[in-house]
Image 1 (spheres, one colour):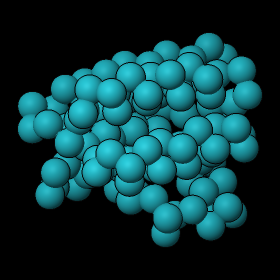
Image 2: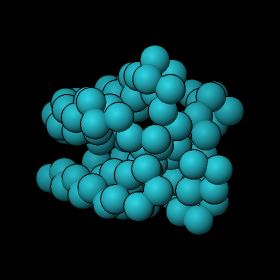
Image 3: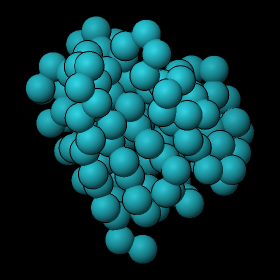
Image 4: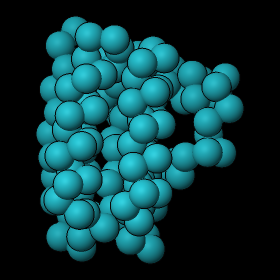
Amino acid sequence: MSLDLKINQNGNGAVTLLIEGDIDMSSSPLVRTQLTDLFKKNQKAIIVDLSKVAYVDSSGIATLVEGLQWSHANNTKFRLVCLTPMVKDVFEIARLLTVFEVFESHKEALEGV
């Protein structure tokens, strides 16, 4: 499955990156490039919407962990929203649900931005 990335400005200094497709070894460099570009624009918050991601492998997880590290370095909120059950299971197995800020809805993710 090909990867599609969409950016939505939320109007409050936050931006949402909607990822559609699998995040794996072949597609994670595209996600990394997009996240790097967003961090360069000094957003207040970057919300990564995973509602259309059915599969994520270790390279995809590593890319999101990099995003989290960049957020700390840039004082930017980095939140994940709408994880699919399969993706949520991967994060749970990797014990990352407590490392990332994970939200069920966009409304919740945008609170406090």
